[in-house]
Amino acid sequence: MPSRRQVAFIGSVAVAVVGAVVIWFGAAAIILAVLGHDVQAAAPWLALAKFASLAWAAAVGWMITWPRLDEMEREARKFSWFIGSTAAILMTAPIMLLWLVNGGAFLAQLMGHRGTPGVYFALGWVGLVFAQLLSSMVARAGWWAAKR
Amino acid sequence: MKNRLRALRAERGWSQAELAERLDVARQSVNAIETGKYDPSLPLAFKIARLFGRSIEAIFEDR
Image (cartoon, rainbow over all chains, first blue to last red; front, side, top):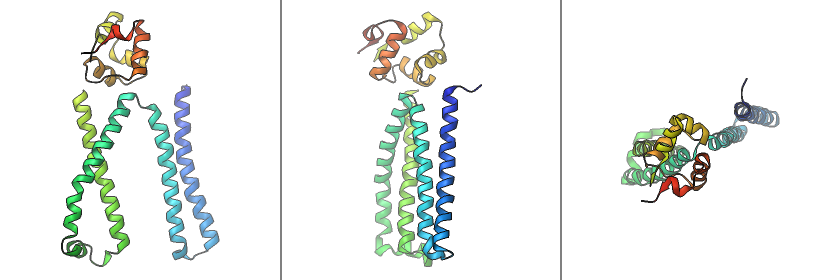
């Protein structure tokens, strides 16, 4: 028989998953019902619904995970996120400066006709987040290696 | 920070995993505290002291 803690954990995961699905499909159903088949008008609202769904899952996931960590693991995560993401911001700065050489000609050539301002913005954001996650993982591995 | 955690644990015949369970922390945390690579927070230090029936100063030494 599962313990009370296990039941609470399973319940929380269910809340995260079911909530995300309800937000995503519920919002999509409402948006499509209101806007009909006007795909262009619905697109930003659907994107917002998708974001809300992911944000819900991430927030509940974090609320489930964080209290279950012991203090050393919390310390490891705080350290690695601070050091890792700071290092990533500093290390990706030269890349941004290289992109800007000749008015971003290299990037424009690389992206071709797909290089809209929106795509550039998304690329920058995703690139930085990816670098932060990667660098944070390296910092965390280093932290554990030092403490083991 | 030096400590007597390993000796106290050995006196009771507990494994690191058993002590970790009693303290509600990971086994790696117990190992890191025992080897002096991680200093526990004050609440955890009090918990350890209560578990072994000693004062914090009797377990941890500031050096």
